Length: 231
Image (cartoon, rainbow, N blue to C red):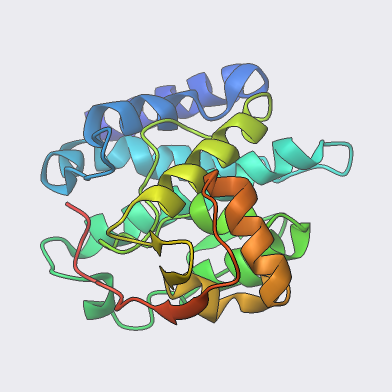
């Protein structure tokens, strides 16, 4: 009974403050359980799983509106994707990899605006269609080779700065990408979602612009992808 009352009060608190910052509680959880390096303390986060569940419930009750800005909508869906991924891991923890879960990206897990979504739906049918390839460095698949889970929530007003930071950190992380003037070894993200980054010339220009690295017209190969849990 006490748990139900706590959740009810927390939901009301979310609702009252949602217009101020719907993602404030998600931000607090990220700062508590995610390190600067992106390592996630899933074990301790389980003690606050009800708080995460309530945040996701509030997101479901407040889907994006047509008058929202692009960055406000991006913040909503990036945060939703990352929170749902953490929830998925906590629902099955302990485990070694998200791939130990049956159909992790193809199971309905979120309902907003009378529509149900899988993680794959959010990524491919919503975020990838928003003409912002840097979302691939903001969403996290709970794995070592993924771009790190930022330990702060994405926000409308800081979206450009946050996407730039996430992209540069990922591209310059030599465990994820190796950028040399005449040969680069890229994350398989650039292979799986190649069309989002354009043709080879456009892809190289994207990498130069977002990494700050000087590269010529190098040979491109792809690094192995480590699906072990990011803890």
